[in-house]
Image 1: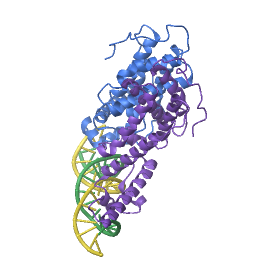
Image 2: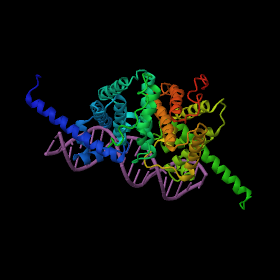
Image 3: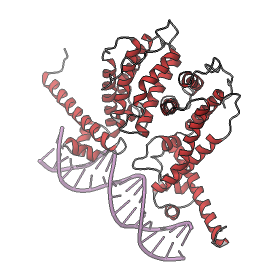
Length: 213
Length: 213
DNA sequence: GTCTATAGCTGGATAGAC
DNA sequence: GTCTATCCAGCTATAGAC
């Protein structure tokens, strides 16, 4: 495959594995104390090393944030690319929305790093950001299957879902006051944005009731 | 009125005035460097005093955040209580939504302190929080005039508006990619949530076009 | 690569003179 | 109430031995 020697491959693999372990510990810590509350001392302690060792794998704290972003974006894109088992396109969209909201609310720190700009002076590198673009493309594709193709409608969709997530985590953390409104919100969205193409497109009823969790 | 002497009143007034000046400087600073980036040294410099003087007026940095919250909540409630000049209730709701979104996007730091939980370990005191409750009541009243009375619909409303704001400030700061969708979002909301009560309630057309700013 | 030790800095908060 | 001077804690990041 490559011109590097096998031993170099091993070392590269071990190094990448060690980096992943640090990122694991970083996410675990951030979900407990918040992104801003994450310190390198505590991160090193959790990872079973000392502070200088972190610098053997990352140039700076921002580089760690960047690796965290990359991991989160990849997880997000992978989750959103998983196939959906739903009988029709609108039910699929509800499932898709639930998936997104569940992903966001299950780890607020991850949601903040990925979708809000809460860490001062941090911006993800293009490489880390790429998977997020891929996920947004998947969103567009799902909407297109429901006849939603206009850019403004896609923006309404993202606003609606982000709004549900934001209200949920800000005003009812751990509860379901807004997450339980997903199906209604999707119905509202579809009946307004989907082009009229017959009678059965208007509402989905509640075929996916009890499908969550 | 009170048993305190006039000179005590004067002193109280001057003290309150000095506190307000500090809060003014605090908001000006926060809007430049963010809430987390606000330091007491720089705040003191802006206010024309030294750090220890701040502690003559506030017990801690969190107490300053709390005073900032109180100011923002009062401004918010006052703005939302201003009368609306609109020919019908649905147009009034659009104006109301514009007012809210404009308030939020014009000062991101204020939006974050008021509606998100971005300052770690800070929670507003009941006194500072009270005006925010008053503003939410005003929102409920406006929605009720449009026949929206169910609690779940009020929650959909707040999610929708917060979603527009959040996407705007996170992904298109300074632009209008999401703020320009306000009228469409309100139309979508009303046609779904407003109880059917005749033909003319379904849509508002665009009577308020060019009404913003 | 990993450690011990520490530099260098910045933050909130305080002591004590005036 | 306001200042000068400072404390003390916490942070990121580095030097240098092994």
